[in-house]
Image (cartoon, rainbow, N blue to C red; front, side):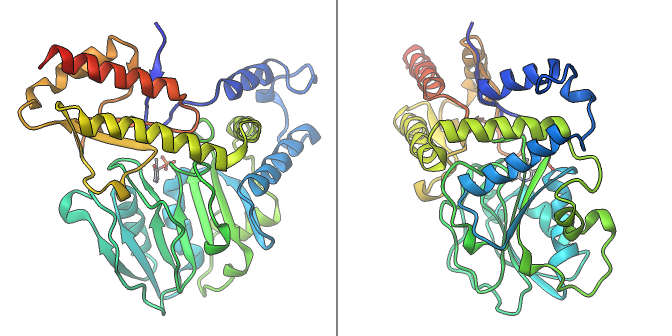
Length: 357
Ligand SMILES: *Cc1c(COP(=O)(O)O)cnc(C)c1O
């Protein structure tokens, strides 16, 4: 049976990425060696990193004055690297979910943290608006897509101080005005590559302004000056990321991705809103994530939750169980998920509703 992969992360990748990666594991660039057993400093692999950086810049229209680096440690390490490198006295954070809360916790180790607004009181089911960003903060940190709760900031905010964004789960899902950001980071395993590599896009001029000493490995300048080759980078995930970037370009780039992502999200939210058995957990359509669609059984149908889970699994739907802090269901609609998979899920929801009228 065909499987439809709605996992939140690690998650679906383009077939192209998987096939190219398998081929390179067998024989990398005709070297007669596997990608897994060559030096990261071989000219063939250095070319992979160079091309991945160039495609990042091209696909996201990254202006002059920014660097792109690939690191280990996941997005979670960035929760501490960002304040280590940028927080002198005070930073501002928007608390929109579990990942944002974790980032706030780390930042508090380095200075004052002003949480300008939070949706925690209502289980993070909206994106706060109308808050004031303190002009004396060293930076303002946001999480553009809240993978667990299913909310998303779909515009590039104006900030009076350098804007820092965790884009782990929505990078490359829409065009982004990079010039509005000082730093963007993310783990690759949601929309780009297998787990193991983290990307960071940094405006060079924001670095070098903190007073503290920064350990070599945690200093962005180290990795920028060595072009992600200070130590052994995650070779395999970087190679896979390059394949996804090539696929993105073949598919027409991020503007094209956004069109398809909008259609996929509209189809699924439309079904949730019209199907009497289901209810979206994010009330305001403007706050709903296009990447992670969260829904629960509607009032009166709560007892059918486990049954729907089994019903959908038996029809090839994989990974739709919601995160434990929200319950219900979460269907992740990352770039690589085809429109047909959303149609299949919608079909299953309609069939289930027919049987449980
Ligand atoms: C998954 C995720 C993280 C954590 O990423 P790791 O690479 O596992 O550290 C952080 N932020 C967001 C928005 C995420 O979706």
